[in-house]
Length: 316
Length: 316
Image 1 (cartoon, rainbow over the protein chains, first blue to last red):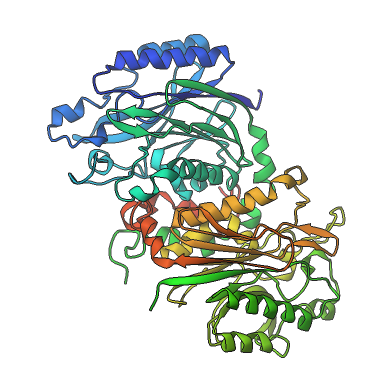
Image 2 (tube, chains in turn orange, green; image 1 turned 45 degrees about the vertical axis):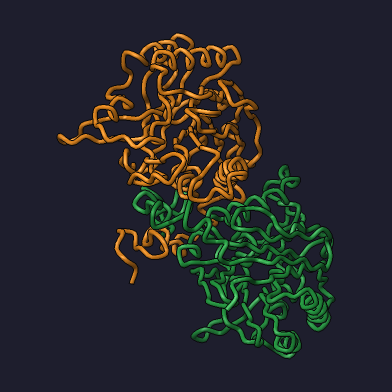
């Protein structure tokens, strides 16, 4: 079994609220066919790829909210994508809003799945780091209500797939070093990350010009410091009046960007990734067994922040 | 009390093995005077600033090894530096090899101290992430025997000083995201990091051309992801036949480099740092209380690496 994987970025331009799932799936399939002609083994799509980024709106009506979610996967709309994957022998990562009923209670997750080359789901991830806010904040130019609409996941699983160890994350997760570290401790060799990132960040608008820099910096550091490939894929451009960064790229375990998108629309980029290249970092500078000092890291799990303990109670 | 701090980089060029402490202290004092004329409140010197980087040699004779260490601080050689600090009303960070006798046993640390504007030591740090190896490895062009000569520290203390919350790290620590995170959880606003980094890394020489990139990447990510200033200071240039990177720089909580050295010799650079600027990140994107998810981070402290548990035993 080869240890090379040809991974494609499947960047999307805007998905507006009146674009139905079928039209988006058609775009995803077009990108998949293009990636296939380039020899891709795997194509990575953005976060919430099937719909517009609906957390920008305050939605009070439950039925209206539910309409943005998928209650099964695959479903009638996405089935053609799964079938095409099997036909072309190409896997994919897909982000979407997931509605499940657990013990009689509706749970909503910001979800990513990993689908193998036969079209089977082989991994699932629930976004851990939900950004934004819980309550309606009308002073913002647009809302960012992920904390209202989603339940956070509580782990970063990795999956043996595509001849290596694959991990998933979503958007804001990429800014948190713990995301990559937890997966790396379990041997991750490639981290797949879909995102929707507005250029404008309402709480700190004076840094809007740094959005692309912070995007790349976080993923480069995550790759280098964990000896892993990182694939970041945007939903880019002006979606419902909100400008989103592009900056989709593939980063080597050296921290170097090896492939990049250059538009804000639907676009494919590809890299030929040697999973064994990870060992050049995992067995040297970042040989965790030799160099990590977990006894010095306790505050990372005993504290939530400057004022709260890990369980959310005030720090003494 | 102002919340601005003028921090100076006190980069050193090479210190050779025949340079005595007095000659090095004279260089440090010259840099301190220069920093003072620029209005500095604090000057940051490199790791192991008082001597050559002796872990590049395999030293069997205990007396010869001890000669590279300081058994008191200040001592006769460094006293003039402490006195000048008090005279000029300027603080400093200094890295040196420290020999202490604890319960009748010699302990050796790779140490940094923080000295306030009165010339008093107000903080001490023992390097946690010791790189390199324990045994003589003659195949290397030069040794990197920090694991042999030093005992690792086991925490990252922070100190209220200079009107803010100050933290310290040393060299290899800067590549490990846990270093910054642990200090940030305790409110750090400025992390001071001295280093000696050879361009050539014997276990992975094919990446020598990335040494400067990795240096800056790690410190930029640490700054941004924790909303803290980072000050990185090299001992640079060709020391005893080994080329060391320079790249000393001051990085804002935005991740942007705001000051930088451009030589491989003794050099001062300065930045006017607003400690309150940290809040623009600590209260928004990196509001830990709002956004961290410690329950997902357990492996960071329960695991040492891919094969070892935190206590060093094989993983089941």
